[in-house]
Image (cartoon, rainbow, N blue to C red):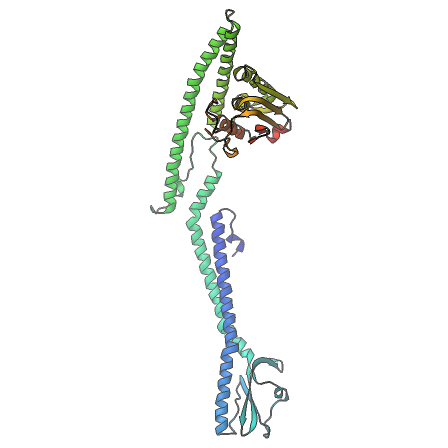
Length: 445
């Protein structure tokens, strides 16, 4: 039996089950061994002492009746008697022994000795009873260690059989876990787990209930996926068509020479807003799809995107020049991304700063590693830091601010697509500060 097979690599449940079995065997073995050791100590220290004291009491009773009563002399027990006026042969090495019971070594052998003294006829008579301790050890081995080994063998075998049956019982669950671990639905038209083969013949088996539940759950997921794809396709068509009409009509009007300056300025705002809506629709569709295609990515200049967004926001949100906008480009930064999504990220951050700043200063700082947008001045109080990116979460004093509180949530999800990190923090000195930390690959450019 290979002990390493108790801990097979796959399956945390199998490993935990094996640990439980091994711990049970360990504790049973320790307790059983301690029981045998304690039993051996009881035999040596209690039973043998009681037996020798019984032998001594029996001898004294007979000795009082007959002073010439023979001493015990068997294969395991030998007795000696020392009387001051009598001539009994007693080995010299016994004469200095103290009264009592104990284990000692005599002539190279381990023995149990009882030294008992009695006052008889005004004299102190000493009885020495010596029992062979090696025989006790042999008895302890045959009646203690051997049964212990047999019991442990039976326990180990039964535990191994129980472990094998338990592992077979949970093997469908382990297989199901491995199948789910290897499952990826990114490139599949629908979710399919292929777990029907894991079902057993018992209709009440929990694994059958689990398989049926997962199949029903994946069916509901497939219905939701199909519904989302139909919705995305329909929304894409229904939104793009009127936006294209608005943009085309605005461009046609812009070519007319009969427009005055105010009308042409208003028309430019319509064109820019239509382009923003197109970019927002593209961003929402990509978010609904949940993944990006490499063919859709290109080298996008953050400097250019920020400049275009600030130009548009200057016309739509700061026509009177009530806000001071400072732009600091420390580097020319380009990232590999989809232009519409970068437009949506930068546009929402900048628009949020313009919306929540009634008057004061907005600062845009762009470096190789990050884009920072901060606003300082009379600012409506934003929600707590842990709610900044929650949808529909707005400041307590934001009743006059345009929007619905979803822009920052869109920014957070778009940054997650590129493994970027966006943070926001409010302070009295700098106002609201949002920072987009670009990914590792983008920082190296």
